[in-house]
Length: 149
Image: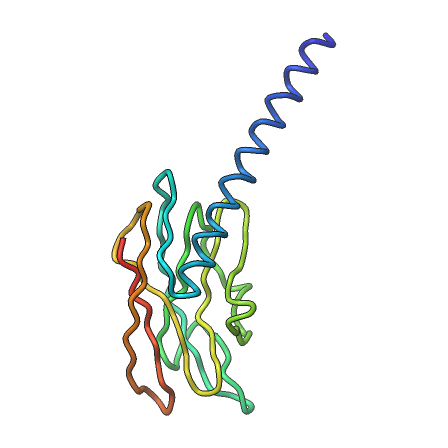
């Protein structure tokens, strides 16, 4: 009985360590992409896009689910759906990375009147290389980082 409990604890610790290691690599990749740098992962991860909108209300830009400047939320890993609890907020470069279990989201963020968001060219990948393009929309500069993978 004691051997079974010890074996179960060892397996649980190994699985937990694997998830933490996996999450650390996702966080590192997301941070690199957010900084405009290339990121590499040893194993492929799922890539997911979520459509949202930035709306100007009450003197600030707020991320909402309808109406406004269309933007993407970029998810790396096993990301959940829906993400409505992450809306009705303003994200900045400092809080644009949202860490969930087995998923890291790169949120669209605002600085002054520039909105930056991210979209990947793949559904899964190991290498992520962001390239930035800019345009004007609804009184704001919109910067899209196209993440090649």
